[in-house]
Image 1 (tube, rainbow, N blue to C red):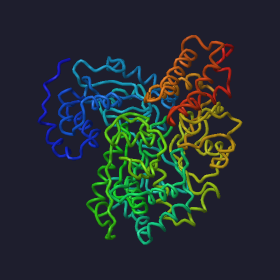
Image 2 (cartoon, rainbow, N blue to C red; image 1 turned 120 degrees about the horizontal axis):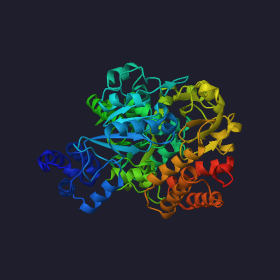
Image 3 (cartoon, rainbow, N blue to C red; image 1 turned 60 degrees about the vertical axis):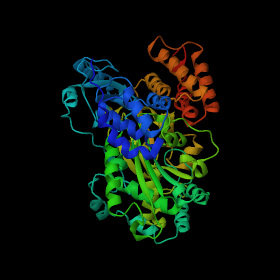
Image 4 (cartoon, one colour; image 1 turned 45 degrees about the vertical axis):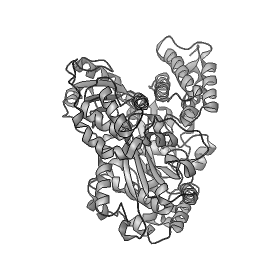
Amino acid sequence: MSHPAVDLSLLKPYLENVAHRGRTMLLPALHYAQSLYGWLPREVQVEISHALRVPQADIHGVIEFYTMLYNEPTAKKVIRVCEDSACSLGGCHELMQAIETQLGLRPGETAADGQITYEHVPCLGMCELAPAALNGERPAANLSPDAVPAFLEGRYPEAQGNSYGEPRHLLARVGKVDPTSLNDYRAHGGYIGLTNALQMTPEQVIEMAEKTGIVGRGGAMFPTGRKWRFTRGAPGTPAEKHIVINADESEPGTFKDRYLLEDDPFSVIEAATLAGYAVGAENGWIFVRGEYPRAFHRLTHAVEQARAAGYLGREIMGQPGFHFDIEVRLGAGAYICGEETALFEAIEGKRGFPRIKPPFPTTHGLFYQPTVINNVETMVAVLVAFNLGVEEWLKLGTAQSPGTKLFCLSGNIAKPGLYELPFGLTVREIIEMAGGVPGNKKVQAVLMGGAAGVFIGPDKLDTRLTYEDTRQANIPLGSGVIMVFDETADLRQAMYELARFFAHESCGKCFPCQLGTQRQLELLDHIAHNGGAKPTDKQTLLDVGFTMTETSLCGLGQTAASAIVSAIHLWPELVTAEG
């Protein structure tokens, strides 16, 4: 395949505008350049290196790190088909065969005319719409082999999510407002929470955040108000403090933040602004995973509208001395960037390697300055509490788990989708609320908390979904994932797919995770596809899992074996020679 000469005049005006920002603009510059050329030729890398004053070796390292950046010839349009657990249950393998037949391509290949590149990819964050795929930036859901021609030609309808539950507070505007309209947002209660907060001192806002009882909804469960208090008290001026929203949900089974990002983006902006006022931070950042192009564009548009209307920038809403603005950053395909310190590294223009902690982000976060970093749902939950009033918020859920939670239901379930529900319902009740298992089949297993969670059997379906009950049952609530496997599902295949995901996503910084995830994958590939288990496999998998859990640097390696080890304990026959 021949390639035209690189016309650097297309890139230079952009680089001239951002050069003064230096290395922090590396990821945006790479995205912009790739949108121009389809890939990142050496001449482009050299031009970016000179403009941003970043060594060429570092630029090459960043490109190699992210799966959605290419330093080899690639088409401008990439077809990405998800191959992880929920999509596997939904029939992605038949879909892939149909696409490969029509395109005449294997995964990783580019068409002879240079128009299309075809890839199998990890989770696209559309698990409730499985099987899912991206045609360039166009998301498609519930794809069947018959739909392949329309999908490839761009005629297939864009994916639209399904949201359910009562009472709807976090999702109150989802599906009901125009996500591109600030006026529509305001007409449906927008900026009431921030207005209420500005009637209080920042200290009073933090006290109120603490009273809500809201903890991290991405899985860490650290008290949100306490995190804000620590950051406010850290040394530094407002210009040296940051609010970061982690919108890099990339774990199989998790898709809750996508709804807020795509269908209620102004709420995310308002929530970040409220946090900025409380903490005394002038800098806001929203880091969106690369597989969410629609969310990125809607957020970027929403930030521009909010800034033009005086909800971002200087003297916000006429409040003297209250300055806060937001930058939206797009990731490029790396699950590890959901780890908070790896996300900081990505924004700073480096490979997304996690840092050693301590020090912690509240004192040494983004640019090693005091930083609040919260998950999208966490931030919006605080905003909702300020809209409702703390007393009303505390009436929802339980005493130790107040409010509502977003639950991601996928797999063998009649009505997959995102459910907003008060804490306290059981797993069984939520499954029944979602229509149960199709075909009157029985539940074989449920993956709780996501790929980094655990499997439970039918005997645990009556566990109440609260922080206190799941903690007692040793079940992680995590990001609210409930992925159902019916009695016909192949759990060996599910274990293999989880192992494949973590082996693909390990950043390689620490050996226990780098080597452990590969060894785990090799063992489960053999068990699932190449002859079954050997007598030593069960103990080897447990040993590998123990080593990763106890010695890995960050949460990825520490949880990469969690679901697999839980399955081994529940169903040892899956990985024994007798099984």
